[in-house]
Length: 410
Ligand code: NIG
Ligand code: FE
Image (cartoon, rainbow, N blue to C red):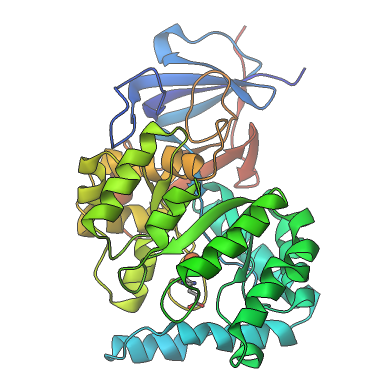
């Protein structure tokens, strides 16, 4: 049995505990003031008022800081080479976003060594951790050959258990005259090669990428090989992706920037079909492309489950920062600070169908962060400030390398 750890003098402990507030569209944000928690064997063993905390082997004094569940970044594209800052510069000068830029990253990724791709992944994973992300999903999608997709998912699996096969990102140039042939490849040999490394399959269902019939065929083939579906939907314009996600029982419809009333209804109604389809909003992409932000308020008010994620990728959203996404969601998408924090933690956990993370109550995995601020609100109130003081994963200090602890007073 490992040594128990008490973290005490917590000004605000965000628990998201399911037994707190009623489960509404905003989920169940819940917090305890002047709190403490105990970790044992990598799990939360106790939470409550600091004055009633049980004894433990070691003690960390949070000194009036807030403690939150670690961020769950349920949407990221981290296996790539090359960089596209010139595209970003051009967009900021008025050019529209075109998903065709993906092909530039495909060329650079195919030309990169495994070591270079691994180094890029390691750099971004470390960047995420320093900013409080304790679980992240990672997609392929910049290889688009059997070999390059397979090595993308194999590399991703070195860093996370939440690996997503995105062979259907765009039709690569060599298949421009034969998109049906590419769909056959993605739902056949490429899927067979990638499936052993993946939990999820995703399709970019958008004009210029894959239509609803193609997406349905690919995700159905993936489901037959044990992969669970998720969909890039309605990022660049209204389309069939959201309703297809709900039809297939996908864990998540991601982007949701251009929603129709029917899309909003479908997402809200899907909650009755537990576990339902989460609407994952990616405000970094709207920031990076100057598109309008998704209407989070409309989704929350309709009763949909909303997650926030970074969409970290070299084209539309080159941020790994969940605090930045929270700040955007609050300022630009009319989420309350509580809703945004819930969506970046428990919402992400729901989008990944992970009942063990996204909250801090007995039994949860002890993935948490200590914020250098007295409340969760500072994540939006102090945008751009590096507020993450320490991060624990499964009860182990993961960032920084060391933190003062005291042996328990006898
Ligand atoms: O989620 N939409 C598709 N994929 C990425 C963009 C990738 C890129 O531009 O390289 C996204 O925004
Ligand atoms: Fe994406």
